[in-house]
Each structure stands twice: as C-alpha cells, then as structure tokens.
Image 1 (cartoon, rainbow, N blue to C red):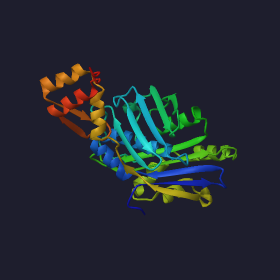
Image 2 (image 1 turned 30 degrees about the vertical axis):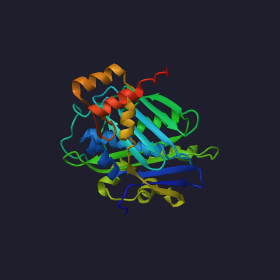
Image 3 (image 1 turned 60 degrees about the horizontal axis):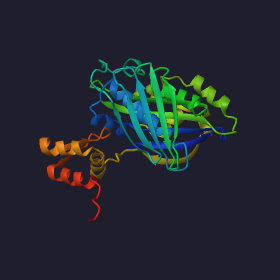
Image 4 (image 1 turned 90 degrees about the vertical axis):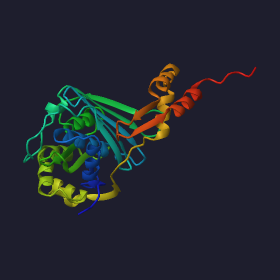
Length: 306
C-alpha cells in the first residue's frame, strides 16, 4: 500500500516492452476540486491528467508534455501540462452543462457524450531542445485513453496499450484514479506482446480493480493487470506524483505588459485595478491602480536623450 501518488517505470518480458503505471488519486482530487469538476466532468479530467502523466515519463531527460483533448461535446476541451518529474496540472474548458451520473457505476463510465466523438488530440513534447515535437490525430471514441492510445500508435508510431480511469462516489467526488501504459521498445520484437495485452486486457479491468480497492500502489496494480506475465516485470524507478502550477504574480504581470497601452490606461481610469486568473489552478492575481501605472510606464519605449 502507498499513501501518496506515484509513477513506476518498468520493463516487461526481458525488455521486450516498457511499462509505466501511475496512481494519481490525491492529485486528481486536488485538480478537480480547484475546478469544481464532479461526476462525469471529474472522470474526464482525471483520465486526461493520468494519461498526461504517463506520456511525460517516456524519456530519461526532463520532459514537459502538453496534452489537449478538443471535442464537440459540452466539455469543450481539456488541457493537461505534465512533467517527467511527476508534476502535473490541468483544466476543463467548461464544467456546466456536462451530463451527471445518478449513482456510482459498477464499471467504467462512458465519456463520449461529454467529450464528443468529433475533435482532435493534440500533444506537444518539450525536451528542452530548439524545437518541440507536436502531433495531432482525430478523436476516435471520446473516451480519452483510447483516443490517446490511437494517437501514440498513429502519430508517434509506437505500438501502445493505454488504460486510464477515474472513479467517483455518489456526490461525484474522486475516489480513485490510475493508469497503465505498455509500449514496444525499438528493435526489441515486442509487437506481438503488446498486441496480446491489448486483446486480453479488457477496458473494464482497471476500473474493476480500483472499485475493489482504491488504495493500491502502482506496482501491485501493474502486476494484477499484467498477470500472468507479471513475474517478468522488472522495476526501473519510482517518482512521486503531485499537483503543481507554474503560475506566479510575475508571470501575471508579464501578461499585462503584453496589452496595448490604451487597454492599460482604460483599466487605470475606469476600473482602478485588474485581475489576472490562471486557468490551471484558479489563482487570481490582483493589480492595483499604482501597479498598473508602473506596468504601463515599463512597456513604454525609452525616450532618446536630448
């Protein structure tokens, strides 16, 4: 058992495939609380957050992944920023108008009605190089994890199996969130192994295990999901999972500096203050009239000396 969220990275069947398993219950609970996302909205945000965490742990170096699910359902879209260190944040475009669930379901909750079946999956990988890697595929199901699996296979051309789920209680609050990713390794001959896992690992299996016991560690979950081949699971490393937002008052001020001088002047004269909010964490930064005037003067070009 573990009392904190965690990601493990492993090898399977003599390095024929890699396995990444994440538990993210406390982290998803905090993120959904900040956005007042409950019920189906919480499930959608939880699956996306957990999927983003798994995508950001595929390299040895520090990596940041930005994942967007943009569908034609009432959610509008979901954005997740995840780092290979296990830090993650995310938000929904819309929470109101999303279908509700009357009671806990015995199995996996369908998301297509809320997410939509038409739209795109966008993934941007930042490895700290001169250019980022960006890919996009069309939504296939609206269930998020299967759509991201399709993205990995189609856009990044890596045979992959992805299973993520978030469970909620009668009030729509998060009680469990976890995800599993299995991928082939280059020139390891693991294609048949990954296809076997895809065919035998029912989409309901993870949901059922979490329903039986939501307080399980990622290694135990991985071994149960990958049985009977779990004896060949070789642990590589563990890392904690936490909610973290990179917003700050300085970044909020930099956003105001990008406005036209006329807009800043209007804020000073009409509103006497300004608010800058962070979509990811909900933090609100307030700037007074005098602070806005300093920002306005700062963005003005210096006058040449006479």
